[in-house]
Length: 247
Image 1: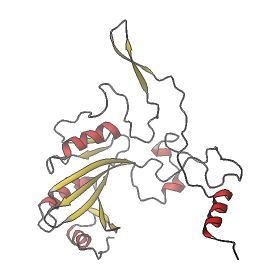
Image 2: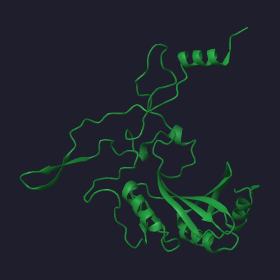
Image 3: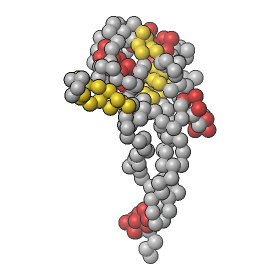
Image 4: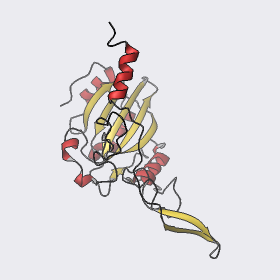
């Protein structure tokens, strides 16, 4: 159910589009966002461009999203000891499980019906509106969405980039080829389960006088992200700086 928002653009979107075509119209920090079903992705985009009340004549960005282990931290940071840093793996982070075997107790709380999505940023110069629309690919194994090149020509290279880095294919794209990776590259490097060391290493072979690909010999490892911890030391520093405990 889409409740009307106080924001004029959000209200117009809720009035114009039926619930089977657009969902989750929300306003967050003044930014209006809307989810669009894959079946109506092209039609809704075309109406957002042509309908006078919207007039989104410019598509300023298009990017891919991989929600594998979204919102989950792999390293145990909340229950670290007083004297040292815990390096124990607390959960299953990216690359340690596939989408079909994701932790259901975590993803049951998320509003992500599928693993891969495409997010588009639109601009209406006429009305000074900005809108973010998102569409989920229904098939996680072979994510496919309709191309928006016919609606906004600027989508051409953006969709090629998403295809290259996330492996999302765009049906109807006039020239869907990799854009950033090398010829013969294996995999899609922006997927959460893509190894940080890559799948292959390339080097120049003096005998063959050409570049050759070989399996990576580096042993996979998990990197420690920068995190904010709530342990005894940080609590003590906070209390001292804030004046807590002083009479």
